[in-house]
Image (cartoon, rainbow over all chains, first blue to last red; front, side, top):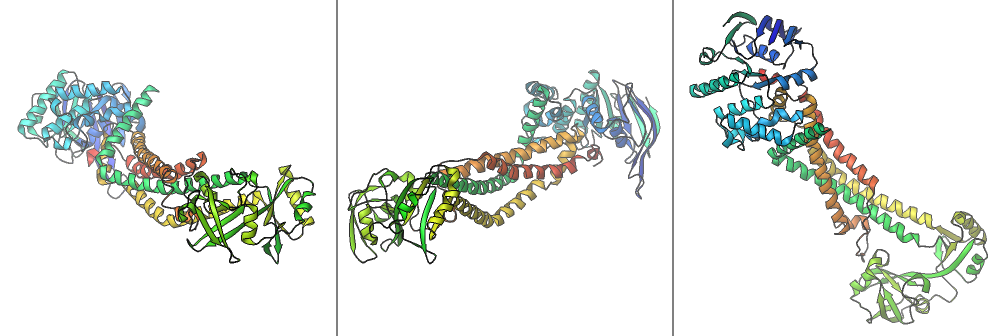
Length: 226
Length: 383
């Protein structure tokens, strides 16, 4: 469970271009569910996602991961929590070109220093699960958009995180690939993962796999629907 | 510890694949850096080996040499001087030496002629009418043992000698232009009367006493110039230092240009690299991990360059006789000695070179990365 209490986030605070992206968000995200943060561009959903995922700290407010308050932790501890608890899938996938699909998948595990062979096996197994086994040695820039996203998902899952975070995951996919993505979500949910997404794609927002949609506008929570 | 090793292994592995992705840039850098190390190491190895060689040669040279000066110029030692020196306490042995220079019109080269005492070389006394020649002389004049060679002396008289032997190649550094004659032949060739010598070599019972003995000699023979072995060593040292300096000054322009190029290439961070650092931070790498990875990148390139450059310099100096710097470092002569230096490697020198090449390069790669690596991990999300 992730609990957010009165979360505010300002960019360029104290400067002429100060911008409050979040204005007092109170939200509890349940474990083992698929939650979508929805809203128009600039509503603050991506900012909220970065705070939930320990990528950024709120300007004020508290973030609780389980029973632990993590909002005041220094970068080092936040990074540790981030890589053990969260897996990220970015809108542009953010894969490192020139590297193979498998190398990209293994990247988040490098700083943990685990067993080399075991890591390879884990990466291969993930790629097999996501039907990318044949493409594991291909450089990521040679892959199609759907394949790239699956590599990004495999990368997000390599450290076996409890929570998967995806920012506008279907924004760059056609309908068929978006449906494929939702099947993957279904699977992950079945494995007991907590999934938090941002999206304003009706295909995803209205999908049966989604348990809860949280609407945002101008940094405020508009409503939460089940 | 195991985790730490596994982590470094993983980082190195990623670094290697990173380097492979920017093959052209990194190979260019490696090449430039290897050339810098090669040039610097060549100069260092060569001058160090020459110094070492000179010191080895001078080790067996006499501790004190006495010359006679007339009007400030070197003149022959007249009869009686040897006996006077023999009476000075502390002088263990004394020997009058005969040596001189001769210009050979045929090959436009200067030879050094000596009448050795039997103890001073491996060939024993040279018989009258015979001559032992240095390897460079043999090469230039196309001579072999048994051949005849003639010289017209400064008195205009023609002398014909039979080549008895050629001095060994290993001694070429000091004997390239040497001709050894019997004392009788030497005296008649240069028209030096019996009892006269060019200088006197002394050996001293107690090396600590060399300076005192030198003082006593100048009291006994006020017209003598006293040359101590330690002074000769010091002179050699400064000659080689000077030559090393000259080469380094000549090279400094190009080395600096190379260094600036390498620094610029290493420290410049492309938009692609910045993006990658952002991604790594976003997927859970700490600033420290990114820095470690880049440290390995700089270290691997500069270590490889250091090893390649140093090995190439070693081969250049000790197997190819430092062909690039030979004319400056070896000195100028018609009769160039051909020799292979005995490999001498100085640990301190390696450490100095290592510090001035690997260290700045590694810093040059890390500093800009550090600036990029402290960006917030959410920058990727926002970008």
